[in-house]
Length: 186
Image 1: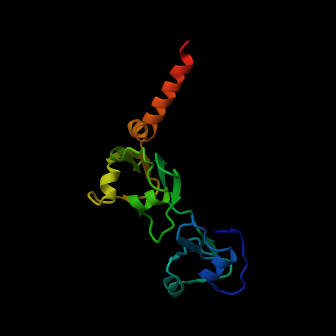
Image 2: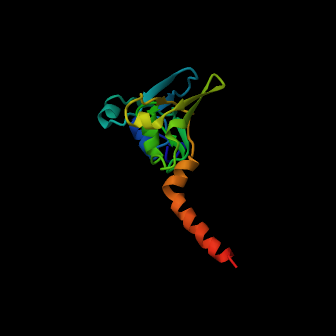
Image 3: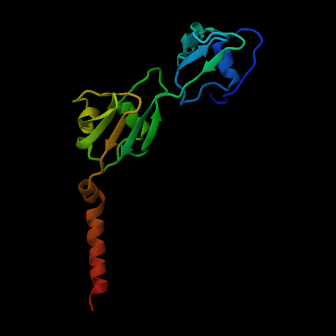
């Protein structure tokens, strides 16, 4: 929530009203929220805040005075390596997953020097890390399926020294070496 805290209400209000008191949900908030009923440790009601406003209004529930509205953080996937904007990206869509291409888009796409055929997807399953090699070029072309990423997944895109040398470095390195040779000659 934008401004988490205690907001007193004296009469039952809709969940969207209560969320708006706190400034609404942020882009890193999970859309599955929980309403803990006052005076009952066992009674909790789940509510899904849809991105579709008609659905959000049609399915909303009431929050009673003394209830607690719990808004957890959304799941995060990590895109690291040779991409334009590496980092963690919140799954702020209507699901608790996103596709690899959606995540790459959030990371600004691949750098020209990325080793597309050697990307690795790292996923924790029952406390054990599993690694899978992916060919991003083939996935982008639609020749391989676009895998689903889940919270905590890490996509690592390695850097290619050869691609970097071919596309940016060879002519520049040759001219630098030639000019250095001129200064070194007696």
